[in-house]
Length: 160
Image (cartoon, rainbow, N blue to C red; front, side, top):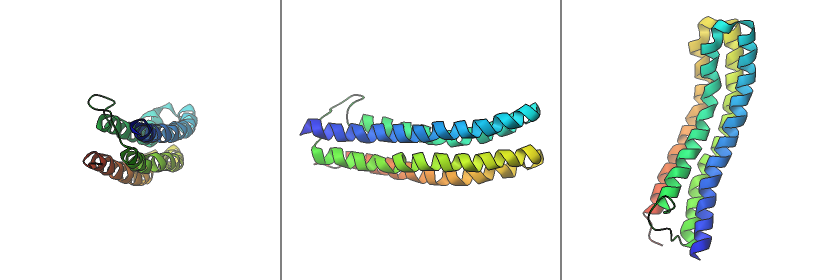
């Protein structure tokens, strides 16, 4: 049963990193396409649009963080690696908020970033305000990160 528990726990860690990473890769690519178009017309706007392109990349970092915390908790990065089936399932569930919200919010944040990049293209003096729109989407990625951190570390304290 320990092997099955470890399988589910590892699946949770992998899903958090994989799904949030895929979301960020798609999102940074979308924003990068829009940013490249702006820089083609006006290279001086590079710094402003680069910030907007990078914003949806944070979900991938958050997913990686949840994966590292989980791997550490389950003993893969050192320590004991004996996880019961129930505990493995709990780790899997604990990683899901970051996995799903990371994927979805990164893509939605990219859409807000693309719109903000268009704003900067026409009104470069509004770059500060343009950052606020995709940053609002970030709030939900941070909430998912917090829930997954609390859940993963909480599962570590349970004796099953």
